[in-house]
Every structure is written in structure tokens, then in C-alpha cells.
Length: 543
Ligand SMILES: Nc1ncnc2c1ncn2[C@@H]1O[C@H](COP(=O)(O)OP(=O)(O)O)[C@@H](O)[C@H]1O
Ligand SMILES: [Mg+2]
Ligand SMILES: [Zn+2]
Image 1 (cartoon, rainbow, N blue to C red):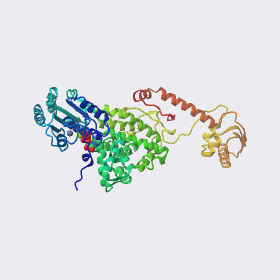
Image 2 (image 1 turned 45 degrees about the vertical axis):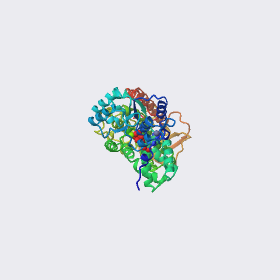
Image 3 (image 1 turned 90 degrees about the vertical axis):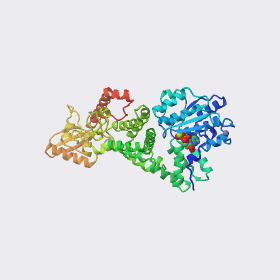
Image 4 (image 1 turned 30 degrees about the vertical axis):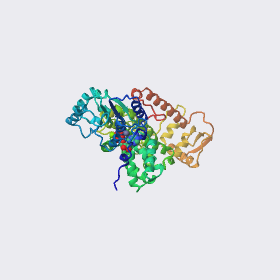
């Protein structure tokens, strides 16, 4: 059987059949209605949104012998010849395959001759940005003094590559990416016409994966039909998309989670060979971050998703606050992509920014490094720094936040507190090297008196003592005194601060000092100013 791909078979033949692009269709119909056609049109937009389709319909409408409501009739000899690709007055050039200057010049030389059959000679130059410089010059000459019986219809995905001299002589229409709902509706229509079974959710998945391109959507639909043996079911489509669509994104995110810059750049390099549209890839990343964040709060929210497993895995690998940060960086990075020298380097910078600005509290560093960095402001940890990170990124200062108080040896430091003249109980506790519940108990007491035979402690009535910790405190005090000692507890509200209360107060003071230091820091100020950064609430801890 001769299977014709859906995109080809279902190319719209008239304006009514075109999905979306109302702004373009309306203007063209208006121009036809008022007989005010421009001599050169340029259709721009991403792949598969209807540039070639609309240009061909316009070519037909310009010459149709029997316009129906300014739509080509589809019946007359012009329409039929054009639909079958044998209309002599339509000169279609695919610039991607025909860029030699002589070819274009020959074609354009013929422009001066009258049309064979129709009212107008129509030049449809597809992928016009691929023309060589010489060819553009030849085109420009003709555009400067167009013969009255000639129309130019140009189409491109990349208008930035077209010389302004040419651009300024064209009426430009920018076609929009199609919405998932528009694509899904068209799929349903086509499947009904083809008498193929389908499940609505499957079309949702496919139309989302089409990412604005009807052609991509219909190609995916072709694949799904083959994959599901003529039936488009959700299960089949899920497994089909799950494996093809998300792998590269997943790989990059895993490298990000591992803080592995070389692996990340490798994966980006791989993608560069597959999917040249980095804006799409970034979009996908954002969608994944969004769902990872959801999964971290409400795990059941993603249970039904095609890629629930991948999302769950990432949700366990990434800290919620990191996910928020990455999302924010990715979101703002979308803006950069257009401004970057090229989309790929723009994308790379966005991803490296995520790595660079990752707080030092990330899971991997927590488990891998017992002693977080000592400075309040530090450069990224060495494990995250790699020679392939551009120098500019390396230089960027990062607000890094430490998780535990630790000394340089990596061993958690004993929390120390100030002496108070009338109570050296705190010092005694330190010297006794108490641990766990015993230390807790001691910290919640105030020393009333101590002599050779007895020690009296005042303990807060709210504090729950255990016999075990009382015993071990008694033993520790005895060892400290070097003689048998009786331990007496008096339950009463202490009149001076217990070591526990002192600690809390000191912590609060140090916390405030750290917050003040961060607020006053020049580098933090600069980050706020230039990158729209903000200090995450609760992330500041004194070291
Ligand atoms: N706006 C649209 N409405 C309906 N079908 C469309 C539309 N845009 C693209 N298609 C489908 O995709 C195929 C390729 O579209 P085409 O116009 O060649 O895209 P491009 O914008 O890349 O030139 C068409 O044959 C048609 O099946
Ligand atoms: Mg095209
Ligand atoms: Zn016609």
C-alpha cells in the first residue's frame, strides 16, 4: 500500500482549511477583496506552522478563475494544475537546495516575460534565508523594479538572515506557533476522516509534544499510528513519547543534579545534533522543574504522568529550594536566549548559571562533604568547578550558605558560650564532655551550689528529666570532683539564664549579625542589582 504521510496528505487547499494564523489569513483575504495585493510577501515562523501552505494558497488565489469568497475555488484549471504541481506560472524554488547564483539569475531573468496561463507569474522562494549573497542581489534587483505581472512569495524560518534591503521591500507576516488544542483538534479531524480509532488523551500528549508545529504533530501522529498498529491509544503514545521526547532533557538534568559540568556540556552537545531549537529544550526543562516541584509537595500529583518515574527520581535528587532556583534561572534565561550570540551558547549559559548559583546546601554536597564552606560568601565548591566553565562564570560570586557549624577539621564544633561571672556551670559542662540527654539536662539547669559532698542544681519545672540522665550527670560530676558526690535537684524557675537559654540568645545574636552582614555585602548588592537576585528567606546561617 502506498502510504502518504499525513502532513502531506492533509495540507490545506484553501484559507478556510488553515488552522489558526487568522491574522495572516484575514489580511490576505482583505488584500484580495480590495485588489490591493503587494508585490512581495514574506512569511516567517518556526517549522510546520503553515508558511509554505499559505504561500501556495495565496498563489492559487492570485490566479484562480473563480474565487469563492476570496478563497481559491479548487475546481478551475488553475487551481487543479496548481494542486497537482504543474502550473507553469508558479515558479517554486527551494533555496535550501538551489543557491547557486546562476540558477536564481536565470529564474529571475524569466520574470520579465508575461505569464503563460494565469494573470500573474508567482515566485515562491522557500527557505529564502539560504540564498547566497549573489542570489540575494539578483533577487533585490527584481524586487526594486518588479514587473507588474510578477508576485514574490518568500518564506523562511530565519528572517534575521535576510538582508534588510530585501526585508524592506516585502510585506512581512509572522506566523504563530499553534496551540496544543488547535493541533489536537486537527488530529481528531484527520483521524475521523481516515476512520482510525483514537483516544482523546493520546491526542493531548501528541499535540503537546508537537510543540507548536502542526507538521511535527502530524509526523508524531504518523508514528503513533504505526506504533499502535492503526489505533492511537494513550498507552501506546505514552510509551512512544516517554522514550523519545524526554531522554536528552533527563540526561542534562541528571548531570545538573550531580553538579557535573563536563557531563552536562556533553549532553548539550548531543542535543545540538538532535534538536536545534534550544528555546524548546529550555521550555521542556521548565516544565520538568515545575512538575518536580509539584511532586516534592504532592507526590500523587504526577502519578498519572507519562514520565512519572523520571520526575520522581529527580524529585528525590534535588532539593526543593534548588528546584525553585533553577526554575527561576530558566525562566529569566528564556529572555537571554534571543540575545545570545547563538541559541546554543545562550542555553549553555543558562544551564551553567544553574550550576554556578546552586547553593552549597545541595543534597550532593551535604552527603559528600561533611564540612561546608566556612565563608558566608564563597565561590562554588570545587567539586562543581570544572575547567570547561567559562571564566566569566567562575568569577561570579555565589551566596553560599552553610548547613552546620563546623570547624576546619570537619568535626562539628562544640557549641561554646560566654562565661558569666556568677555562674561557671557552662564551663563545667564543657569540661565534663557531656553528650546527648545528659548534656541536655545539664544545659537546662542552673548551678546553685557545689562543695566536697554535694552539688545542688536548679532545674526548670518545664524540663522533663530521666533517671538515666540524672545518674550519668551525677557520675560525671563525681569524676569532675574526683570524690563521691551527691547530686540534688531543686525544681524551680531559675533566676539566671540556663546555658540552654544563653545558647539560644547567642544564636539569635549571631543570626542577626549574619543577616546584617549579608545585607551589607557589596557582592550581594551587585548580584541583586544585575541578576535580580534575592536572598532566599531562611537560607542565611552564621558560620
Ligand atoms: N496552519 C496550519 N493548518 C493546517 N495544517 C497545517 C498548518 N501548518 C502546517 N500544517 C500541516 O503541516 C504541513 C507542513 O506545513 P508547511 O506549510 O509546509 O509548514 P512550514 O511553515 O514549515 O512551511 C502541511 O502540509 C499541513 O499538513
Ligand atoms: Mg515550508
Ligand atoms: Zn480556482
